[in-house]
Length: 68
Image (cartoon, rainbow, N blue to C red; front, side, top):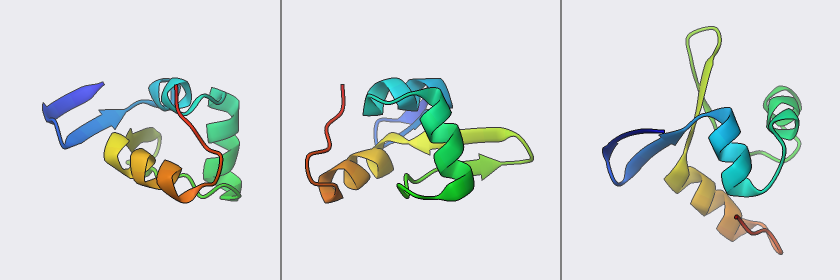
């Protein structure tokens, strides 16, 4: 987990999957298909990060969604 400011915590795909309570494979698929609309940032060709504040905001908009 990359941290420089408590308001800007960036998670790897594996960390985001644990945080959201889903699989890494689900996040990989969602990035391509965009079905769930989980926010992410792609840095370069392969580096992907998830902002924890953006994930929290996403979770508040999804009925019945929860994180671990």
